[in-house]
Length: 124
Image (tube, rainbow, N blue to C red; front, side, top):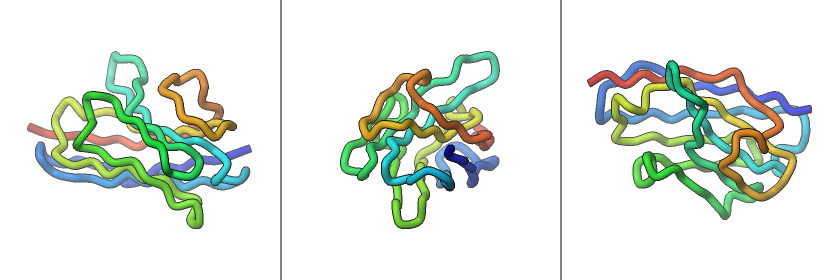
């Protein structure tokens, strides 16, 4: 089993930056592909970014490409999401997720472990 805990959310203004962290415990973190997802009120959970087990392969949703950067530190069992140039439409609960495979995917259903989420609110 894997436990995931997100942190780093908050209330910021448009144009500001935030860095989210996802701390993992339990199963070997370095063997998991990881991802970030978000869910705004009244909307479905959507893919934000993903990273493979070693960190050498990443993928981003078009809406965040060029503004967000996903990374991981396997020595610290932690994944990060650096969010720059934040927009009001980035407002959502952000979730980290892990899957028992080394390759990345955008599909919510293919992730086995989820954190409780952290709120990000961007004011205009």
